[in-house]
Image (tube, rainbow, N blue to C red):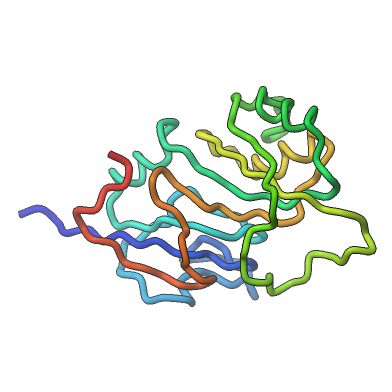
Length: 193
């Protein structure tokens, strides 16, 4: 008899680690937000300062599939300054970033300017106010997932990321999930086929 696996989608809030165990004191972990079953793993982690869609599962095969280069991950990024067409073109073509002190050229990806700010809940820690100059929002879709990749890419283009929220993994979207909200999905649900 095969094991029945469980799958979850979550809107990871700002300030939480996508971990179930951490040796660092005073860190907030996603396990504090929901009672996940033993063996649950977060796939395609978001760093502490990032927010948005997180997929969790007890099935290692699904984990491998999500991390593959066949699955798109879409993010909305709020940038410091009004991003230029040249910077968008550079991001689309690929920019050089550092990964563990090694230079890396990112793969071509989809990037476009958002005409309006996304309707996200206010963040628990204020980003900054208008006295520091204008900001802009972009959508960026990648198929790789290097450490802090989006933040490094936008900084390399001259427009550092102020706020980052993943809104899509494959066909799964964040939809109306509120920060810290968790939704269990059917065991036979496979959004990647």
